[in-house]
Image (cartoon, rainbow over all chains, first blue to last red; front, side):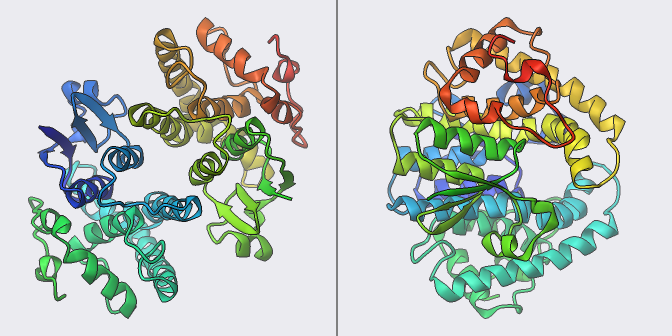
Length: 221
Length: 221
């Protein structure tokens, strides 16, 4: 059985979970308190991060390479288009969300509000929270600009770029940090993704001490 | 003509330069002072980062997606192996260097010592420099451990993983921050990479105010 070591609100883990679920690859989820740096876990992944996917006896780390491998081993249904230029655009946007959006938004909202408490590292830094709340607006507008031109973020088919973006936004939505009223096309896009069977496991997540708001799992939010 | 907007010591730009040169794709190098956020440059890449590659009229950003696109459009000579599991290992190591090594070493040594001065952001933070100098030892040992088992970092053929690692190490070597005496196999690996024609352009780099040490361009260092 495949096994994914994860934490529920990690956008990197969520991207992998969405990829696996979309391709109907069964996986056992194991919550891993990576910040405790348990020796057994460190042996599995010396980088000390989640996600770590155990697949066919191998331990795999780093969410982007994991998703590329899943795609190469299980091409159906595809999460990458065929043309190299279109594949580039998918990868560019995955990087956009996992690097730029992560640094400017996720780390300043989710990590301040949730991770710091869970890992007992003190209180949210209000300067960071303010910066994150400002930056997410720019990112939502960028998404809206893309969705004015395309049905999905990277083009006219759903790809890993949509999962990367939805992974971050869904984690932030769990703490009510996404203003869905800002752009109608972003809300419509999220409603489409949210209603996919692959999304169900994410919507069922519960983090102790942080009950999700009612709209989090509501498909008609 | 292809055009690469870059800065000479950026490891992300160097990885792209190495990929292009290895595949004999001609490119005009244009030095871009990205930190000045010139409006013309920001139009080319809203993320405000280098490298940006202008290829066939398209502006491409993000070094990892650019290298994947170069590989897909110009598969010879290959910088990725054929088997999905081997390709995963290449991507994992590219992430290792561009993410973990970058955060723990490059940003603490090169950015403190060079980028801060060039971008007029003050003096090196000695705490960061100390941390970077400590962390690089662990990374060199990890490389040595890999090279005990394999001819190249990701397996028995040279791949993008070697270029990613060499891009970081060569930038640090420009400021004499790599202890080549630490591991013989790491030194031998770097000597092999350094003597490739693709490396010549990097060895000719000169950064104003920072003359390279004599060993930097010496193939017998």
